[in-house]
Image 1: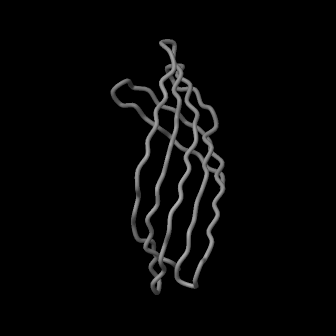
Image 2: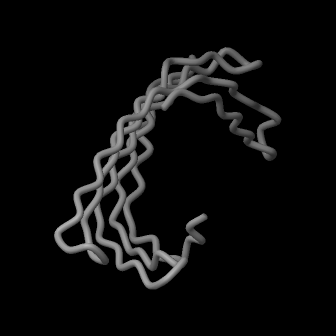
Length: 104
């Protein structure tokens, strides 16, 4: 998958527009249960205030399908180093996501 994203830092009035490429793998263990994972690479972008941002995001999780619903839970880890004139800050986020998806 290929896409575009926009990030805003409202306090600093700084914004980035960058592209990304993503790969996804979904494996069904049973007809109603499976595991999936993805890797997304954010291409380097320069903000309106000359800050440089890049990074990546990896996810892994499980899902159960019931009729037209997919109930999922996944772990994610995201690293986004930000380089400015003052230096480099390594922004790292990890956590869990869960939800329900409608299947058509």
